[in-house]
Image: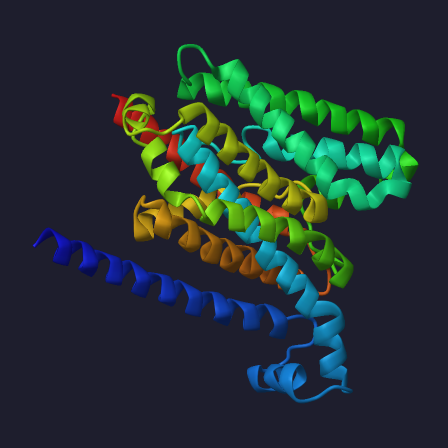
Length: 336
């Protein structure tokens, strides 16, 4: 009876994933079709699969398609990174931008772009090192006979502020070299083209493949250190492994679009409400939902003040800030 119930539950979750995927595909075509020049669904299909020398084809392939693909990959990376951090740290408020992971990646990216511009191709690797360092530092500062959620948030805020001061110092000392700093600070997808996509996808693919190989380990880790150890899991090694995965995913996104906030907070929670806490299903649900959210928010950012475009990070902040306050209020209610 229990086996049949588990199979039914799995079938429902797979069905939910298919629905989310269908919504994501619709969002993909909306993102490609909407802009200063609206292109209908039929015209989008023609431009992608049939035509090769028309105005619509050039607009889609040179401007909208790479930007939409970058938006989707960034949403996937930040969403899955947030899901990992929330699981590893057992804290629903953990997210790459809130606890300083994105700031660590951003600081290293700035250092390379400003001080060593000839080595711009090393930005993803440098961002990964910065994100990993920030995550480990936060974890060490929060550790005292285990990770206390409140210490974790306080350590994250402190480290994030410190790294943010470093970014601000670079912007002040080298104003002539940070023309795109505003877009980077809030997260923007303007003028993202195929070279940006080519920088992003190898690191994103590596991080996602590694993450999707071990969802059961994170499920066990969520049970608590003592139970996980009793089940034969090397807790510290597993925790460090997933921290590295989260840092790689967050860094790959930051290196291309900047400090895009709240994706890693909103998306994993929404996916968890929809499909549950089993990481075998939560990871793909988070990835699909992350791509959908960022693509739609980028479309809104392009259209709301057309022809003026606002950074997608502003739209995400408008959604994320109330969501963050809601989580804080819910946690306070649960602790009473």
